[in-house]
Image (cartoon, rainbow, N blue to C red; front, side):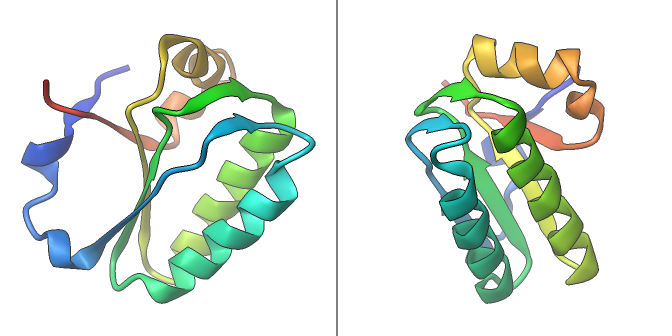
Length: 109
């Protein structure tokens, strides 16, 4: 997986909204997260970035919420990107091969 430096990729920040879920994206939180993701996609002009820095657990329910969000983004002609994922979250994305589906940005140190 090749990630793109976040600040280099985001030249026009006025077109970008960042959401920062916390804890886990699992069976307990994924439905609420999915609703918030869809609402944010409808509100943003161009690009929605999901900052995964505070996510410790990502299960199949969280993956489905992210994939559903990506589908909605594409239908709306917008972009959905992920950033700042912890190694354990990146491993889940890689094992499911979703790292090749999502654009994953890295934060500059």
